Length: 217
Image 1 (cartoon, helix red, strand yellow):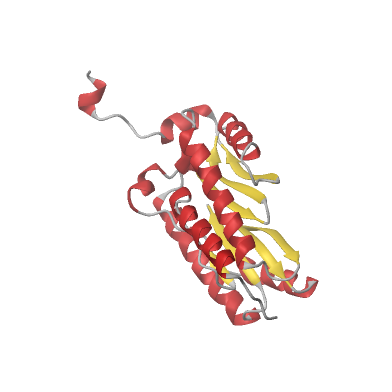
Image 2 (cartoon, helix red, strand yellow):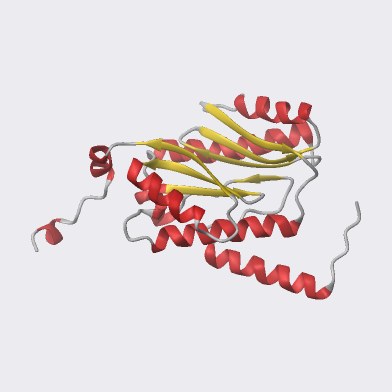
């Protein structure tokens, strides 16, 4: 299908993409298969997954993306996001057979414990639609960062066609608060929670311990 875009339309789109880099912690590339951003650098220390689980999730995303390309080529647009070995697949496929095939391919990837299949039988999303989802994800993340009663890095946020998915290991209080923030964010049409619930006692164990000199103040 041939697609034409006016100069002003391109400028608006580039502006949106630039803003998404500021608002979102990661900007996924616009390829037929898109891999969820891995947590890197100083954020690893505040991630509630074990370091082993973080590495496995990154490997799952990379292997799943590669195998989807091998089996289905560029006729599908699939986003792969793994959190604690639970994999969310979103995007568009041309038919029900491909929808099932993608799930089968991902479920056979090493270390995958479960797959949440949120694929839709639709034509591939346009660049404008994808950039809009990236902007929405960025705004939700910004809202989580602004919330003083949440640890934003405990959540992974994914948006597909206006539906925002929340992943992470959080308490019920944190889950409810994050859902409230996401639902009140412009552009979010629906919120789906794919969260692992932990107790407040478990959270206290996971929280970084204060430095010795700070605890003595």
